Structures are given as structure tokens and as C-alpha cells.
Length: 179
Image (cartoon, rainbow, N blue to C red; front, side, top):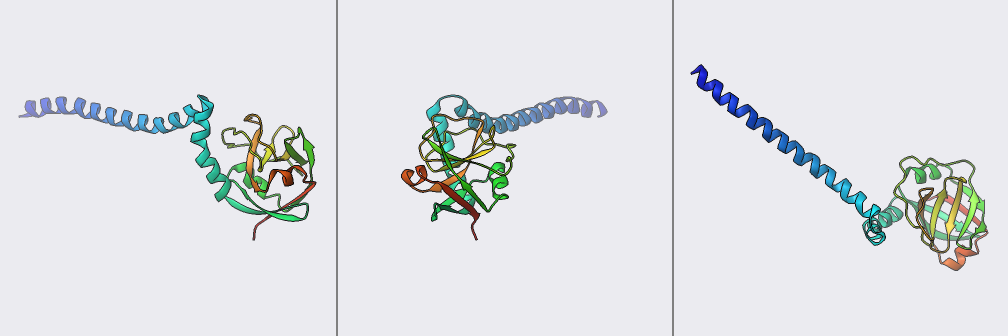
């Protein structure tokens, strides 16, 4: 009897170990698949990256935090996304900044201090209306034309809903937390 129990145990333990290993590998590979899938489109084709990041980018731009923006004395709707840099920027509010043109694409202004860049999302091509932070210079950028390319140095903070003509001629912007 003792010998029969031992043989059953010898057969069962390797089978159980094999089953656990297969289950662990299946869990690991299914956990790795979403991150691989989410990172591979960004590193492969440009069109795939745009389509895979567009829903989350637009959701971030529209859902995180409403702010009150006044451009040259006229209010416009705007939101900040939920990135660490955008939350750090929100801590600076209220701000009134004088804007100047940069490369006939964006209006820029210096911020009172640098923002955090930790936990930055994947780089995205800036679009007209995007409010962004350019880390090397520590400045705010308000795009009135679409940018040329994505850059890890440029963090999109949010979006301002105003037409390109109004954004392109803006001299002063006031940004406040919405009540």
C-alpha cells in the first residue's frame, strides 16, 4: 500500500508541476501580450500608432480636467489630460502668460518653473489647439498649426478649443482651474 501511494505521488507531482508551469506561462504570456501589442504599433507603422493611440489620446484630452482659458480677453473651452506633467501644470494655476510666435506653428511662453516629465506618455504629433510642455526649454506651447512630428521632449498637456486664426494671433493667455 505504501508503495502504491508512493507511485501515485511520483506520477501526480510532476503532472501538477507541469500544469502549474503551463498555467503560469499562459498567464505571463497573456499579460505580456497587451503590453507587447500596445507597444509594437507605436514602434512600427505611423498609421497604426495613430489609430491605436487616437482613442486614448482624445479621451485624455477630453475627460481629465476642465480648465478655464482666456485668450486676449475672450474665454475658450479647454481641458488638461491626466498625465503627471498636466497635473503638475495644474498646480501652477492660475497663470497669465505673454505669448510669442515660434516657427509659425505655435505660440510659446516661459513657465515660472519646470514641470515633471516622469511618467510621460508616448510621444504624439501635436495638433492645432494642443497645449504642450517643451521640456528642454521649460516652456508652454500653444499650437495653432499641426506639428511636423512627435518628440519625446514635447509633452501634450491638454487641448484648447479655439480656431487656428485666434490661436495664431494670441498675445496673452490666462489659464485657471475651472470651478
